[in-house]
Image (tube, rainbow, N blue to C red):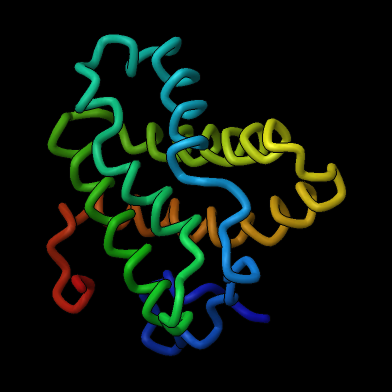
Length: 161
């Protein structure tokens, strides 16, 4: 399948973005995954010292873009939208003054939160594993996009919607 389009290499096309429409409906709602994500992070430093709005930052938008069914949006448009919100979240963490490694931890917790929400809704373990595996490269690409936003403050031209 090749690399994900979140890489800022101009030779990588958004057409390589996997089409993660879930037969019309997302497997889990972003709000369900966000609850687990928030509960996990609120128990850890540095998130337990943050105001609630600062804990979530722009990550709610990341989960919503990641888990939405996409409707009629082509995969390239979905990739661009997810890349943009991830970059915004990374820029937010930079403005807060936290280390960039916080982004990797947030993505890891998000993966676990999505799995937990799927299991809680009764999705078969085999399907959960398939969804988790299909999301893995997207999550890594999302992490790279958030890091890019962190590094350059989210101000690169051409990455907005």
